[in-house]
Structures are given as C-alpha cells and as structure tokens.
Length: 476
Ligand SMILES: [Fe+2]
Ligand SMILES: [Fe+2]
Image 1 (spheres, rainbow, N blue to C red):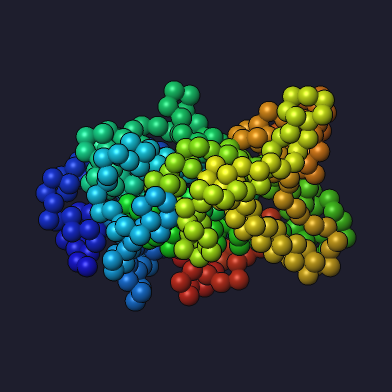
Image 2 (tube, rainbow, N blue to C red):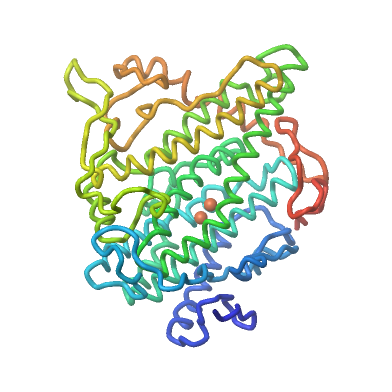
C-alpha cells in the first residue's frame, strides 16, 4: 500500500502518480470543484477552521487535526486497505474473486449507482451553505464545516471512481455532479430529500441524524459490492460518516436537554417565549426529516434492486453476518403494503413477496431500528429531567412521497386519512410557516469563544480533546 504523497496536488493512496492520464483528468476537474466550492459552498467568510483531514487509512490513525483555511483543505482520495483474496459474498457470483475492473455487462448499472451516491454528497453542502451565519457556537460552526468538507471529499471519492473506471461517460458524469444543484428548477439533485432546504440549525441536526444515517445504510450496501474499488471507497467514507451522525445525535440531545431544562425551571410546556424550542415543534421537525429520509430507500419492492443484488453490485446491510444462503432466490419476506388500494376498504398491512424483491424493505427496517435508538435516548433525557413527555417516530405511511403509501395520507399513528382530513390536521404534525419562522427567530449567531445560544445546551466535550471554549474557527 503506497503511503499518501503530500507533494502531489491530490493526496491519495491509489498510486495516482503512476497513472498520468487519470491524474490529469482529476487535476482538470479540481479547479471546477473549487469554483463549485466557492460559489455553492459555505457562505460565511473565515480565515481558518480547526478541521480533521484524512491523511491515511491505517489503524494507527487516519486523520490529522489543525487550523486550515477551508479553500486549502486537502480533499484526498482514500480507499480502505484491500482485503487479502476478497471474494464476492452474495448473489450469482458468490465465491468468485471480487472485481478489480468493471465488468462490461454491469457498467451502466454501476455507473448509475455511483452517480446517485455521488450526487447526494455536494447536495448537502449546498443545502447547508447559509447555516454559518446563524451558528449557535464556534464549536457547532466547526462541526458544520467539518461535515461540509468531508461531504466534499465524498464527492471526490465518487468522482475518482467515475474517472478511473468509466472512461468518457464517467468524466461527463463527474462534470454533471457539479452542475446539478440542490433545489434548482432546471437541474435539481437526483433525490427528493436533497432538494429540501436546511434553513436552520434544528433542521441541520435532524438532517445529520436522519438523512446522513440514510447515507450510512446506502454506503453499507455499497461496501458489500463485488466491485472492489467501490467497496473500499465506501468502507473508508463510513469512518467519516460516523462523525456526521454524532453531530446529529448529540445536536438533538442538546436541544432536548435545553428544552427540558427550561420546562422544568419554569414549570411550563410553553417554552417558546423563554427562547427554547417547544417539544411539539421538535416532534414536527422529527416527523418531517424522518419521513423524507424513509423515501430515500425507494419503494417497498423493487426489481431493480433485486437485480443489483443478484448481480453482486449492492448487498445487504451486514451481508456477511446474515445466516442464509446469500442468494435469496427461494426466500420470501413480508413487506408493508397498501391493500385494496383506491377502494373504500383500503388498509395498511403486509404482503408476502420474494426476498430479492423486498430488499429495500429489508434495508429500511434496519434503518428504522437504528432511528428508534435516537428517540430512545432523547426520551431518556426527558425522563431524567422528570418530564412525562415523549418523542416518537411517526408511522412509516406518514408523509410519504415514494413507495406503497405515496398515494395516501396517513396520520403519525398510521390511520388512513381523507385529503380533507389531512389538510385540516397536517399543521399538527409537520412544521408550519409559523413554526419555521419561530425557529428561525432563535437563530442568532454566537461567535464568542465558550458562549452558546440560549436554545441549545453546550456539548459534554469538545473536539479532539480540546475544550468547548477552544478557538475552533477564526472568522475573516
Ligand atoms: Fe457523505
Ligand atoms: Fe455525511
């Protein structure tokens, strides 16, 4: 394994120096990436930020921390170390050696999977670009920028694969990844959740909890891929992704903690006037971000995904730990479904399909179980404060735009509603303009070292052993 060469423009452990053609392709893409970063990336001017930079992949530490100007961040290309004699663990090619090149028959599908994953990475940077202006503390501001630069690096990871393995079409797709933009009318991002705005920090914490967690599960399936460079890229990305979810988990923790504290101190549920976020508003934000993230897993059944699995392109979450034949062609699964759709008798129930067709459901269920863990922790905070209130995940038919429930409206409890009932009641369940305006009204920047906004509790610890009042960011 060559160690990264910092004399090069693009730090990497893929022996870029030995492949002049690829190196030139990436070096010509880099200025376009920087232009994108300058025009679509963070808007708050800074001198430097205390950032983690990936510098290697080994166990002995893969990252360096230090104050760096964001424009000079070293977005590198790192693949996890190759496994010795890695074999394909599922599907029709099970037991064969993993692919080091793209098989011609799967070229289009693999390219598509990489483009869809790649498209989400810069999208979130675009969605979050204005949040610096209202950061609740320098610690939070630093975490936002950390997530942003790493999503930028994840874009590099996917662009590397497109350039290295997909020829001219790959290079064209790499350009397109910079041309599409979140929320754009003519060239939007591919997936719905990545065209929603992230206008405030409550949304940011919910996004990093729920939507980055979708990313974790998607990367987990691609890590199983028979195409070894994709597998190794995703394995390394998952290391960085863990911090993004930490930002979401502890971010929501700290909102709940602060709200609970204000509720107890003032013996009231109505904390809005006291500058904290009321629990019903938190619940509505949770409902929104969870339901749009569920859509990212696609329909309950999918023949495309069945084909991807059989071909070895995309596995299951923790594929190798599953105790079955890893072919699934004679198994079945119960998936959620709308029975008697469109009739007066329609109901939410389950139906049996082949295990291959139901793979999206399998992945979504893993994700839902993981999300439930967050709700449990937030409820523990409420319980610890002596409050009887609880947060909950809404039913999976609630507010869905993709899959079996896209055509109906359902309450968070999973009761099917008429359009009129939905219109009448949705303001109880999803953030209204009034809620959003209120949350935005709390978003005043706090850039003083060691200080924090009133709607959020400070973190238990700082970053990389530094204290909370460390100078994480130097503003310009
Ligand atoms: Fe990412
Ligand atoms: Fe992420």
